[in-house]
Amino acid sequence: MTDPGVFDELRAFVAERDWAQFHTPENLAKSISIEAAELLECFQWSADADPARVRDELADVLTYCLLLADKLGLDPEAIVLEKLADTRKKYPADKVKGSSTKYDAYED
Image (cartoon, rainbow, N blue to C red; front, top):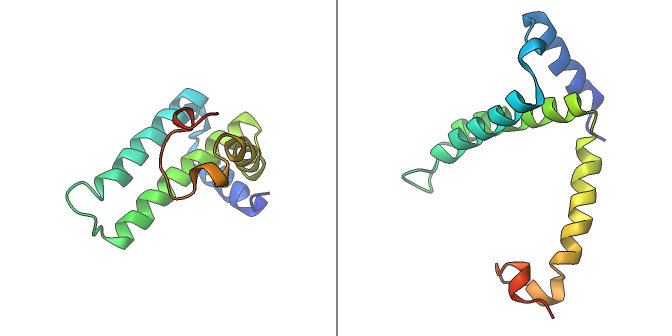
């Protein structure tokens, strides 16, 4: 499970600013997308992005992801592991190793 201290810190930060009123699942999902675009912008013109800026933008994406998970009562570690198990079935290593082909292109 994600360190409960992280959630405590995020909740306190939000409460101190009275921002929970704005943190609907829809708004948090939008914020994830916006911050992900800012992360991508780091690499817009070069693969050599500023590591400090990438770190900051990645932190923003993760923060909004954790806030959304918390809002929905989801355990981030559990949902990632569940999705990974599903993805393992879709992309068996013996069929896809070294390939980026989508799963429907190699099905039996």
